[in-house]
Structures are given as structure tokens and as C-alpha cells.
Image (cartoon, rainbow, N blue to C red; front, side, top):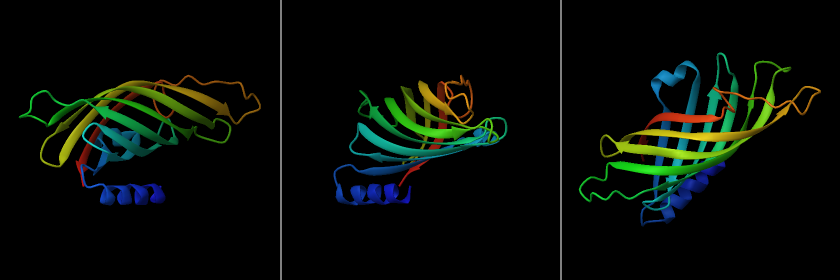
Length: 167
């Protein structure tokens, strides 16, 4: 993770046209069950790449890491660039489960749509909704046991609400 941040920092400093780093934080209500932090690098006004890490606790425990590509649409209203719609694609993986007998490793891939709104010059909210597929490997003797999860790590529904700021 620290090497990825270093690479993004170097890319940001060497690209003077539009390069921008953003940090996303899970919304405060989400802290009941998870914490997610995402760092986004904007190549230009329309394209970005993010790396994210999440930790889940309580009912659905686990960890997750993924890469995400975003394509932002340019706003037709030249006087209001505070609202941006986007589509995204992601892939990654994680570990889920409460104990050694129920833990499983999964990989994820998915995509969806979202909305990004600036509340001030550098502070924003970000809402995304999509679907994820996941392939799992169970640690038990039955390796063909696939899990279908509706919430938590490895779930098929990909819903996110973040607060964030630009560096």
C-alpha cells in the first residue's frame, strides 16, 4: 500500500496538466459495520484510478482491497462543475469469516454508476451503486462450496457513500 501511494505521489508531481489526489472516507453511519478508505488519482478531468482498503467487523468480519477505474462525464453546464456523474469498474479480493472454519478467500469484479458532488472547493460527497460478482475458495475440505452474500465483504450489492477531500 505504501508503495502504491508513493507511485501515485510521483505521478501527481510529474503530471502538471490536471493530476489530483483525493481521499475518500466511509460515512460516519457506516462505522457501525465497516471502515473503508480510498485514494483516487485523477489522470485528467474524466479518468481516475483508485486503490481502496476496507475492514468489516461485527456480524460480517473480513478485509478487502480493490482497484477501481472511473470515467466521469463532463457537465454540460459550464457554470456548475460541482456535480459529476460517473461509471466505474473494479476488481480485487479479500478474506471473510469469523473463525478458521468459516473463513473464505474471494475475488471480486464489478461495476456501476455514481454521483460525485463538491460541497466546497475541496470537500465532496460520493455515492455509488453497482453489482459485484465474486469467486470464492472455502478453507474447509469442500472447496466447491460457493457462498452467496447479500451484505458485508464479498456481497453482490456494491453500494457506497463516502465523504472526501482533494489534496
